[in-house]
Length: 80
Ligand SMILES: [Zn+2]
Image (tube, rainbow, N blue to C red; front, side, top):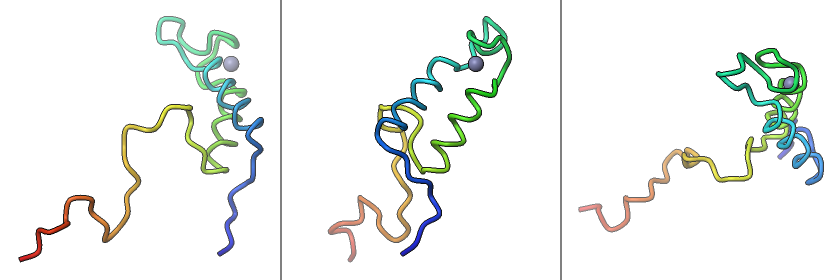
């Protein structure tokens, strides 16, 4: 099965995550603390690269579970 996701090395993923964290907009600053603008080019580039590679944006697991059609975690032993 082919995919058009871009392949990033672990180092690249870690780098882009660091960029995302460093350039994350701060409400009290009105934007990026490094560049001084909201959604600065560095942040946007890192976000796009991670999104294109289907990588999550942070090291921590996302608070949601992937949606899997037809596979519910709770439908075991409930069919009567
Ligand atoms: Zn920035």
